[in-house]
Length: 71
Ligand SMILES: [Zn+2]
Image 1 (cartoon, rainbow, N blue to C red):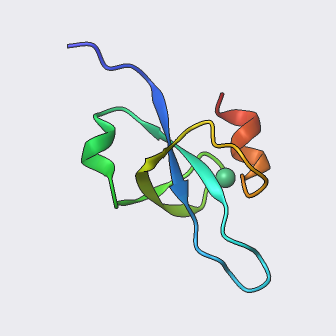
Image 2: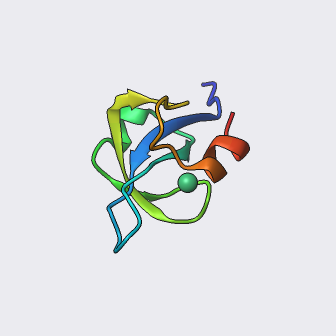
Image 3: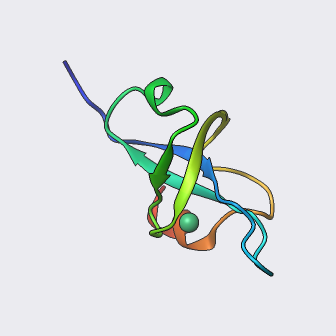
């Protein structure tokens, strides 16, 4: 069984003045298993994984740290 390192998109919650952002979460298993789970993102915050979006995310509400480290 080959486990490839991939990233999935995860949405953090808006926190005070900080808007909700899309982050990358490193996954070592089927992304379907993680759907809806809170996982630690590449940049070190907790965010809820969704399979409705794919990483790399596009748009302006994407975490720049995750974008740099997860490509
Ligand atoms: Zn991030």
